[in-house]
Length: 454
Image (cartoon, rainbow, N blue to C red; front, side, top):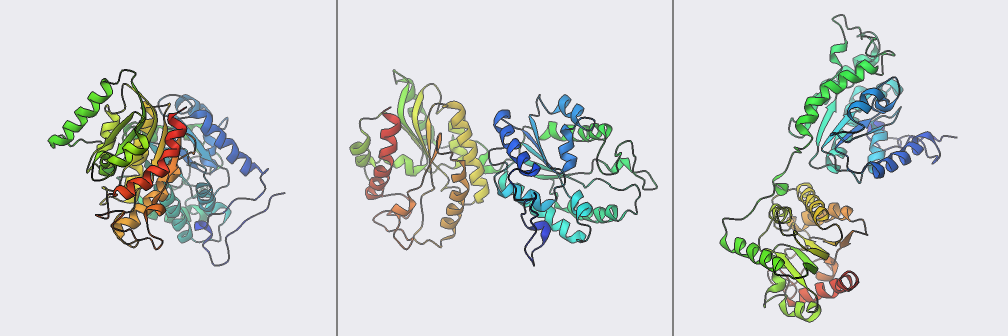
């Protein structure tokens, strides 16, 4: 028996994450489980459709299946659809908040939602649907930082232009189009041509005046194709994720040359520990910071220190992508990056770190990755940069699966109980002292022993 769930009194229904029911054996929850399985089986997904029954019917015989099989099931788009018949915006919000797409990183997300807000809950005004669509869009944007989103207009429903649902949806669409910034969110009114001059919806394209026919899905595909071809491999890339060198800095190029030489001179082409990062990692080699600690704790291991003072995520991304992980095998790779990207948003830094992790995994598939929380900086916990780094850490820790990518957060051990950091731990409130490196080494050692001595 299904158990209906609605918004709490006083909440706006369409913006309140709400499950369709609480029965784990219901159609809705069974479909959610099936879709999670499909993600694992399909692997890499580049195009994601998200919505209600209009989206679901891409894979229904007599509706969109023939078009889907021809263009999306296989081939370059690598698509998956997450359409659930009867869903409204608040159901999508619930699905998003409960991990439905946590393991996806699509190039393009196609959002088709809103029909059921008017169809199933006609008593709610257009304003509530506008707020609901905006909430879903914001949630998608926070989850997929650099994906392009195609925001589809609610298709015309009802035979005539005076159908109250059509009138309401026209008002919603007029506000939805304003949500497209033409940078990361793009508007697509794919069904507007199916209404004649008198406002009558063509039954050849919408047989029940709600859902597309096969011809309707073919038309939708044809409107989508040029967009997908343009966006499939060109995400809206923030500066943090745009790989770049510091070739104008002689010391940076010299250090890169030294790392490559160290790699090529390693006879067995194997390193126990590879450390990727900025100056905080670089200073493991400095007499005034971490060298004596490294010698004490890790002298028996082969280590490749790829920390470069002042590096941003985009510099590390370039090094990882273009050679610093090539021609050898690593057992354990540490990643600590992001503190220098203090002018970027937390989402931009997190998306760049995700790209770095993906590049590492592609080049060193056997290595374990120890993803470090960005260390605390500046003296007080209410410092704006510290707060942003903390928020970034909350985002990036989700990238750790506990098996291949392991979350490593020692920040509390580096701070005082009140959240401040002291000069004896961080003399400049950024780089650890030998005391700080000792704390780091003590926490790092068990992982080195576990993964480098197997």
